[in-house]
Image (cartoon, rainbow, N blue to C red; front, side):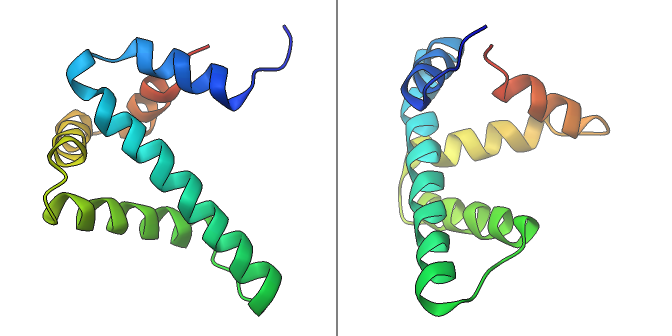
Length: 100
């Protein structure tokens, strides 16, 4: 199988979720890209870096701030992901984000 572009991945992801959750998915993808860009700048210009777990926690915190600020769709997506997490949350997360 050939390589998949980020645009292809994002399109497949959007098609795999209910229409009501697409704005939330778009927001999470854009937020993640923005936070990765900021982390890249920190590493490049300040020689500072977060661990992967710290970066993921920072992205989750930022998403929650967006929800608290009134971004309804991202708040609904966060709530949905919290409900679906449980004893097999890692398996669930892999299934949710796997759109191959």
